[in-house]
Image 1 (cartoon, one colour):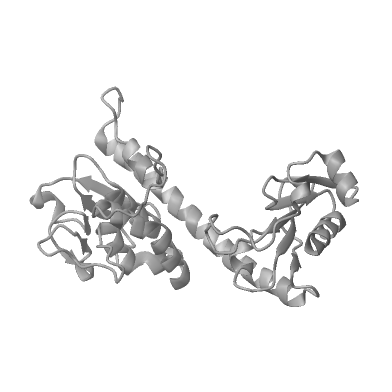
Image 2 (cartoon, rainbow, N blue to C red):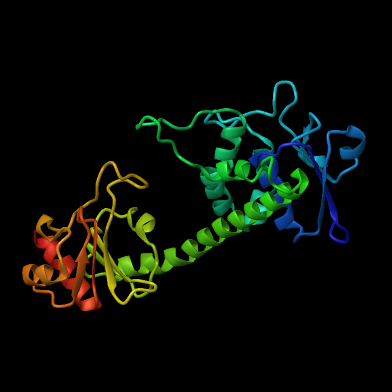
Length: 299
């Protein structure tokens, strides 16, 4: 369907929002940029489009109508977050654009649901410090709306926002695909480790989320991608949480010390640093990094 012609996508005119921007970005990825975008509130115009997004008071995935403004709405997830247009579109095309059901689910949790929640006015944040708020990615979409001094139309700004959203989606999908590939390598390193408290990797993967699924690992050693040293990292007690600390810190008398002091304290000649808080450290060689981790285990 549509593969031999440009696909016409209609959405509302005027100010744009993250849900219509990301919806068009998803379709642009599927149809490799072979899209024509119409922004109009005239039913005579948008009803003839191949896709109608965020307008039209109709949700029918069979005919590619993805609106959420109709009476009663199109429903909500089990967690209570109602669907906006991007959530409805993602249900049909998320797996296709990601190439994986697992990755589509991760992006739904990391990004799509946040857009739905924002559009449906669901408050997701509990602010701990008065006057300081998160700056979500979707805020930047709104920031692309032209100011009174910008020499760009709303339609031009919309397409600029679509390009940005497409880049975000492509990057997020790549990150998840790369992690999927790294998972096999990290799991093999864990299984082959003689001391499962210290996991040694030969490439600069970011393995924390994978290794946290196992109870034994306390330190993970890997080369820095661009740095001339080997990094020794700790593992958080809980995934995606800084509040509960790490499984094991480096000794407190290492924290924030100058290199010369660390050499004297540890006896590791090529030690480079130990961050305040004792959550990661580094040495110039793999052997030095291993020695640091072994010393930390003894403390």
